[in-house]
Image (cartoon, rainbow, N blue to C red; front, side, top):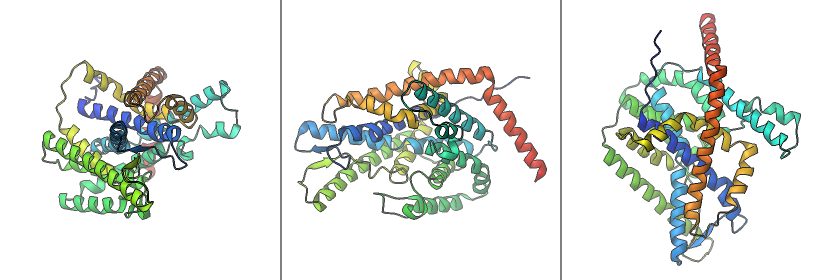
Length: 378
């Protein structure tokens, strides 16, 4: 029997890589940079806009924080775009669960074996149920999304374009939250919830079922304008806080108060997603390298954001990053890229092991058998 390999679309594979790179960059800031460079008890890194060097560094870091806030939404949008029209893929659940468990168990064994952490039978047992224990918040919510997706797909495919738009408006209104207290998201959703992931999933699914008539150039301009608007709002927000707290004008702090996943980044991420979906990628050695990295992006997340790795990683890497040094302009992106590439290499080896043991093949067969059994019983 001839097996036809699914052809991967280079623009979406590159988007998958960019999404995970921004997630690594985001973690670089929120798990390392903020804590090791904080100038007060609120984990704030302040700059004076009266200093040219400080002003440039502030613009650079704040722009990276805003851009990196798109990562999770982009990752879910890719899933929504392709899964909204596909057959049910419940077989992905055990595959994701087993890969997550594999890294949890292996990393725990390594850190305990190296004497970094003491062995605990309770902690060891917890590594075998990472989805239940929310070892990774995203994996737990993502598995829930995959499990519900087939039913959600049936619903939206039977909606008219107008009905689908109305559904998105309701979902976005219920999901949206800014500055941790403004919007209905504080009542119905949250930036780390299944509700938010489902909203983003359906947003990307809409342009798959009802394509958006916009050019790549126009969508790129819209994306750039949205980034500029977010940056301007951030500066205004900081100056507003200065006014409320009687702080001197012109002193600003790096913040991700406006970059919650169910806030403004939804729209920025969507515009970036539309732009990439309209692009015609030229194949060369660089884009080919990015496409080859794409299958290992999920492993990058499982490795670098593991509970036992996170503190060791960012404390050691970010201790050399001085927020007020011009060298941080190169140091932070370079550190994030190095971590990303190293994790890709590790997951490449993991995939080779899984291929030899036919792990995914066996899990898929098991899931298919279970699905057939349930269908016969219903």
